Length: 600
Image 1 (cartoon, one colour):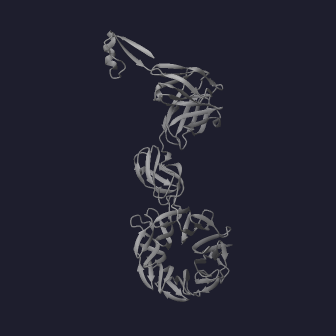
Image 2 (cartoon, rainbow, N blue to C red):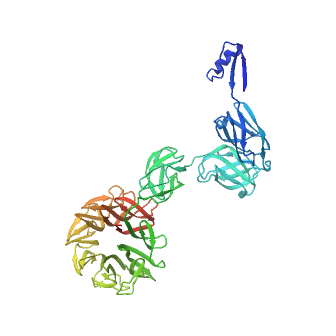
Image 3 (cartoon, helix red, strand yellow):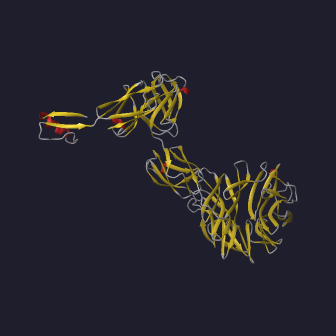
């Protein structure tokens, strides 16, 4: 420890200059004594290393501010990365040679007892003398000046705070590089021939950067804090996406964003878009509450061509012939057996299809398929199982080349039963069997209609349609669209309008309550909104920010399950279902047409 003595003659001057710093003490003696603790080095690790390596120096009385510690390797100044009162982290500098390590704090220098051994020839290594500009966004061109660079661009490894950059041109004294996406503020390093040099100054990245998330998994609606840099303070400048689903910004600072996992979110990257650039962050895993019931959902996707698919408890199950285009419409589960209806195109002819546990169930046809090149529309639309009997509704053209008139029909155990003769256009969309009576809903001459044991009842003038039918006791409930393009259901032939609805796709009766699902138009955005009606009262399932629709419903005790789809911010259709209004997303570029739920 050094001791400083001042004569009484100089006391007043030093008192005026140093009274605020408290660097001395007063006494009645003829001198003033002040002490400053010297730093000490008790050791360093490792004891040897290459240029660019990290060395930890242990000791006492270091400054906690990195810039106030001057570290030298045998007289060559080094960059100090981190500092505390008892530890320093320093980088072995270019041109360092084997020798002592010195540390200077507040003008006081201490030197290590042992030598640090520099491995390799440092004199031929690269060095950085500067770079310009000193800051910039991702994609900014930066010129780095120095010595001993390679003239071959690929032999210069440049990193911006550990993020590797692209070198576009090189000379022995200059490199031209591009700030890489994802870079953060920090040192620039250059490695040539396994020798590394690090800039003294930081390069400041001004682009948005994502460093971490407060949670990396959670349910839809969970609160998430995104940490990073350069977010700004205007939420209107930012778009936050969870794998293509845009979220709402609830709170914003320059380094953090508080948001909520959006309805359309699926497991994938969190991204932030600002100023025309999109930055990818960590993966967020969307989780869902475990359901005691078994949930089956069927739909169609376009990921691998047009293919039918169904999900069991959210897990996709592929079925059908992968060589053909196939579409699924409805699903019914009877015990352990899963029945699905739809259609399949084979060698340009379209066939109505029914699958049982993934295997084709034969459906007899009047013609051998319908020619898709002339606009055929031949489908199996709905399936129900009663005991050992399988009933399927559907339709096909009158002939393979005459598609102007379609024939409404149903199949019982594969045998074809026609409801119309092809004189006018007709389709069968749904089927129900109660007490040996067969009810089929659809359209005849573009008029909403249903058949009971082959006898037709017309519900509405053209253009209207029936999409689903349910029979409870003596009451027949039918859901569809009236001739004013409005969602409606009929009870025993009497139409009941559904507020704000365009199309009603499915209907279910539970006790005294009537549930209908479909879609309508959002009054503010004008987008299509998925919704259901309970006893005529509408309930929106989506907020209208993106188009969506609901397709089918299943009620199990007090739980309401509804299948459908919505569109994310990238315009991708998301297959999903809602349980009591809470969404569960199944997949992108897919839709969900029908749902069945089985109690344990």
